[in-house]
Image 1 (cartoon, rainbow, N blue to C red):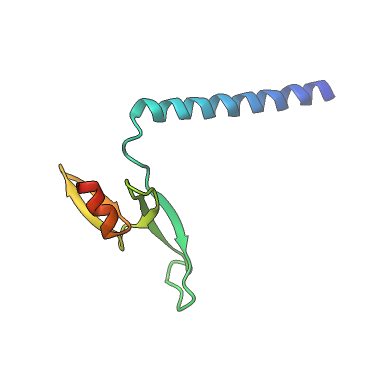
Image 2: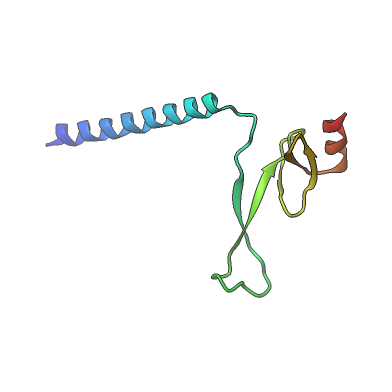
Length: 97
């Protein structure tokens, strides 16, 4: 009985590892030049919203320093039809230079 449980456990670990490797390979294959958007919950101490009190903000990674900035509050620059989000005017000027 224990041998059967051990085999199932090893099988589940192997499936998890294979799935993780396939995910990494597919991200490398599709290109990493476009960072994935990140959603993080934002908590407010004031009045809660009608959707249960939690709101989420879309975050994008600054291409210069790598910090994540909120799409609503970031400095934006459109180059070749693509919108880039920056944390500061310094990062934006370094990118366009």
